Length: 159
Length: 445
Image (cartoon, rainbow over all chains, first blue to last red; front, side):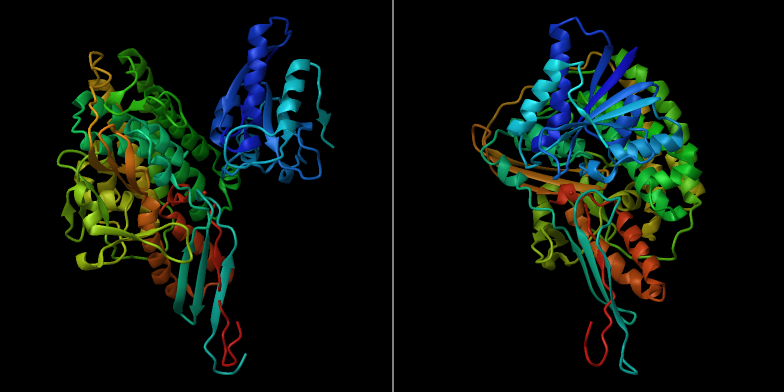
């Protein structure tokens, strides 16, 4: 079954580029190996709500990878969150500086009936959103490990 | 409070949503008198003009596109036209038309975002677009479809939707084929019908009774609704070539904000001015395309729209115009056009102004014989509009000073959104402190 994986973020704001880096490294691995059972389509997004809605419109299974601000968790930890849960943890995911981001995309899609049947959010705990490209070492290593072990889940289910 | 004291109040709104960028507004009222209005932009300076020093003029479209994720095409257009003016590079009409098509895409997507998602909820009494969508799902879907049509143009002509990469000094890196452009036509035609219906929808909103006599400044062209060509004109008699921009206008530092205020120089009459849809409409409404012009007439907008709250209607009409213009350009496009013309570097100076969705965007570069920039100046629309936005609030508040604080606060936010400020450009979120100062004979706040 096809799954749409969307890496989102900003490459020029430090760890905010984690979702994009994850998507690119996974795509590289898929291109290098042909053993992946599941059929993935990998796309990138700047994280605006409209871009996300247009990307996942018509898809039944979607995975979004984004950076997460959560000072209570170690940088590089990857959390899996059910994007369709009514008690979606909005605040911890408010990493976007855009007026309309992932949260608004989910809320608006729900109202408009455009949500996929399954929406998994992989949230990578960030260390820094400082200006400039490049990930912090902990985030960089965590993404490498997750991509290397894919599709074996290396993330924790968000409670 | 001491008996007989003048009641003063300071109303604070700490976070103004639905604008681009980070900032704040402070309003202090004494009775019905406005003591102070400060549009504070606290987003740190981004130093793009300094970044450009030491870089080649050929890099300007890619560097300046990074100033804004909403209007990167505007930055690219002002950059390339400024450099080309300085290098005496004349691009052939088909390239100019394609650039105009790309600009139409940005107007459509930027205006659609503002009209449907940021501003319409104000008029219908919703806190945001998500809440509005629960009752107006079809309208929101129309907005998404219109925006998508704009995105499609930018993606094709610009190379990608965000921060386009296909624009170069002298033309484009790659031209779209006629076949690729034709594939957009059905989508644009469908969006046009939605845009016409949406204009009628927004024109039926309840607009606060409010009129302002503003100095409106926009490009004026001899044969088209302005985007990238023309002289700088106003409804108050200015008419100057873009090369004289800095002789008429100056940027001044204001202590409470990180964005410079652009004003008319004192010796040229002084004061604030407004750029953007209201200015373009006042100066060039005769060049609106058929259906956009018909809408303006049928809605009795008149020659100048003096109520800033009706900017949403003008913005909707500009969406209609941009869609008509995009369809026109695609119909006339011929595959034989060359992608770019030769560019010979030399020492010089070049300037250009183009019409970003939210107003006039001026660029000026000075460069050496190798095309290396040693001085750059960029005046974004929000820098130019800040003082007029403050002026709107100064005029508006005394008339509505009896409103409950929450309503007055909302009115202030709505009034700011009338001008779709982009703080990312001016220096990214606006934080609004609307203070109602209670000051009695003892003098406490």
